[in-house]
Image (cartoon, rainbow, N blue to C red; front, side, top):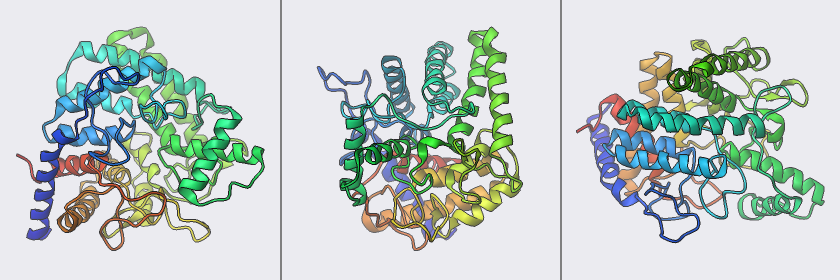
Length: 417
């Protein structure tokens, strides 16, 4: 790393550390949807000004690294509040968003981070019982006929689904709204699945998201089952083996249905009984390495060969057949793409490769910050700088951009106090 690049990274981290307090939002008294604690949303200003679900994991990792553990705990306590109140964690806690979908169930990762820092057994006990509720939600409301999980939506009417399609078509993708109600509702359902996956919108599922067992969702739930087993040992010993067996059953199914000889798990089309999109790679395939489903280093090297570029990791591999440019796909690079790759490589003990992936992203973000004075949500992994995407205007971002940046800096010992 060049001296100037190191200095730029340190300056960017100083900026991030100085802005966490400005990002903290306080509940509005009397608001029906007020959270009980302050929270840190994705943006200080701009469109994303409520507490989102899976974004918060990345935000929290950075805040803990930067010495803002209290803020991270506020976020998790708010998510647990929402879970206990609603029976699931919504994609975002606001009046117009809670009815639609959840998001990737990262709460167990966040609970582990808080507990490993605080060692508060009573807090963990309460969090464990909340996590059991979330697990039940996914196993009852998002279960496919093969026993693995899928993304779907909450109880919605045909009118709701058609309205959601119209929103996506008009506001995001520039599609026609002049189609039959049945087709509109079906597409609305599948766009909901994209949104629940945190990938609104992606070509990965080819508008068939409700018919797919996603790799990352099921690998994530495998990790949740292992965590629940570990916590049950403390608080409900009779359930320890039950959750452990659930994890073993999931791994057996995933190995049988989704794992190929190249060492990678692929999305599975449970309606047609086959792997969906043979040999199509995406950043969600790092999740099995993170949760310990596999330690196949050849598989992760294949992923890097498809997704890793000079300035970052792309969401998906390039596919010439894709007709419209969607944002959760090639050629865009998001915080979660880069952090999942870095995290997966770390879990495999591939420290050199992890550092290379992390440094490329840090250099891109810090050089862009030097030019613009801001952090952004998506970046150009080929030429560097912020991405020029079409679905909605680029937002100045703290949230998961800042969080992933500071977390990787901390791991690599850059800009630490």
